[in-house]
Image 1 (cartoon, rainbow, N blue to C red):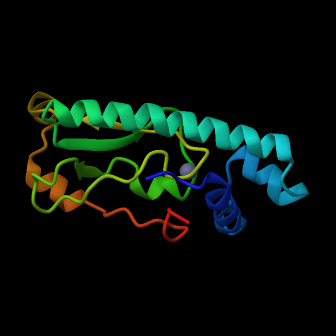
Image 2 (cartoon, rainbow, N blue to C red):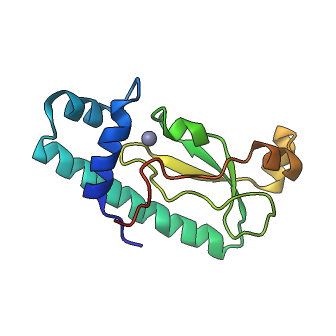
Length: 147
Ligand SMILES: [Zn+2]
C-alpha cells in the first residue's frame, strides 16, 4: 500500500491541534501554517523510514518471527504513546494479539518492532498470556491511511 503522506499530514495536523505536545514540525505548522520545505522534509523522512521498516518487517517475517513489541528509538508523541510497549503478532500466529500498525504511524515518530524472543520474554518474566493482557489493537487516529 502506498501512503499518501500529504493527506496524512493534513489529518495529523488536525489531530495534533488537540494534543498538548505535538512533534516539533507539527507544532511549528500549527503556529504558522505549513512551510512547504518543512513539509517536504517530513514527507521525505517518513517515506524513507517506511521503506526501511517495511523491508525489515518483511525480513523478520520471512525468518518466522511472529511476536514483536512496539518501541520507540527516541521518545514519541502522545498519540503514538498509546501503543508504546504493546505486543503484536506479525503473522497472525498468536491468537489474541492484533497485527502491527504500519510504520511509522504518525509521520514524525520513529517506532520499531522489537522481537519478543522466547529468551527475551523469559528474561522479562513474561508469557504469552501476559502479552495478550497488554494487547491494544492499533486504530488509525486519522481514519483510513490510503486516501
Ligand atoms: Zn507519533
